[in-house]
Image (cartoon, rainbow, N blue to C red; front, top):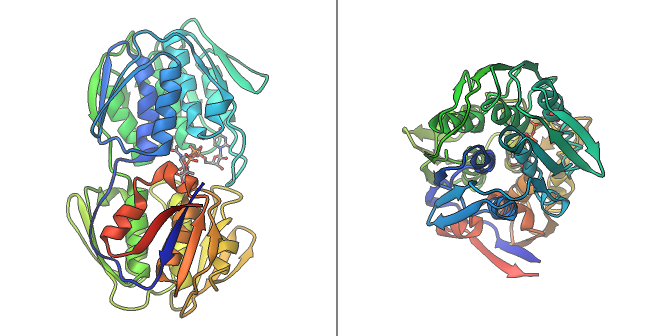
Length: 417
Ligand SMILES: CC(=O)N[C@H]1[C@@H](OP(=O)(O)OP(=O)(O)OC[C@H]2O[C@@H](n3ccc(=O)[nH]c3=O)[C@H](O)[C@@H]2O)O[C@H](CO)[C@@H](O)[C@@H]1O
Ligand SMILES: C=C(OP(=O)(O)O)C(=O)O
């Protein structure tokens, strides 16, 4: 197991490039099942989750070739439509294989992902929607087993806004007979990116990015080339780190219009921001001011940035309220941040963070992906040395984070624990 060793107290200064988005590339990799022709993807980040997804796809017979930041997939001879527990348990996004497999091959068996550190995270809406599209779906021995001769278009209204639920059902509907509408659809940029890729493959998807997505089913899809959007959460994490260390950082190759809620909060924290078509520069010339955030589906403040803003608030002037409305257990970073001297109390789904002048370095344990990022940010400002253990969580979603931070002047190394 590896850990990060960080000596805090250095301002982050310089330029950092955002990688392709984890949450966009994972569903798009699964879209490869929808055609027998090549799907060429560019700007694919080298992440543990991407490697897990490629392993899962290869295990089913998909041919995978990596060329730099491109991945070429061919699902012309899929031999197996089972996603086994061993891989699904390490990456919930494996459930995204369920709908494209059922749509193209008429059957799929995907292990139920189960809960994870941040919440129970059921997939009932994926299953409900797939049934409405005409599939027979059973749960047996921990697996979702779906079967359908050909899916049929339907009107689906999800009970709550679900990102991967919307994506999975979109991938079912593209090959269905007739028209599907998904109402109460997630509006995240990653949903739009998947729709763009599906349309490049010959699908007829409209309305992605709005609460109603309409999909006119087609007989088959063809190969395509697609460039994955930038990771707005990775970009936002670097901006938070820059703000916390009172630094001056330019994030390039990102999409500022995907990050408006986060950029607004950084301005409220006192950061000076400049944006261009694909870059954001943040300068923080004084101690940040505490900000209150409430997580909501896009275009609201993203739950995946909650922990990083919590870290920023720990050293801010004043008191910030951080309310988590999406996941019932996404405050696992709180006791770890308190080990550095942060003052945080939890009341229900709100963490009340009273900023302190100084944090002091300590050993910490990462519990989930964004919690890891928040611990790294806090360690970058803390006096003295900190360690962050169990960074396999971080590696799921950040491409060489420590190298990128080092290039900005951070004193951070990866070690074998
Ligand atoms: C790979 C990926 O894109 N992951 C993102 C995706 O996760 P994911 O797609 O799993 O999250 P959802 O949007 O589905 O979850 C939203 C809420 O709905 C609940 N729910 C969801 C589906 C369902 O069938 N039943 C149900 O009850 C969940 O438990 C949660 O409370 O969106 C989350 C919310 O923006 C992000 O934090 C994750 O980074
Ligand atoms: C919760 C996250 O990812 P996943 O849905 O893959 O667990 C995340 O990206 O913060």
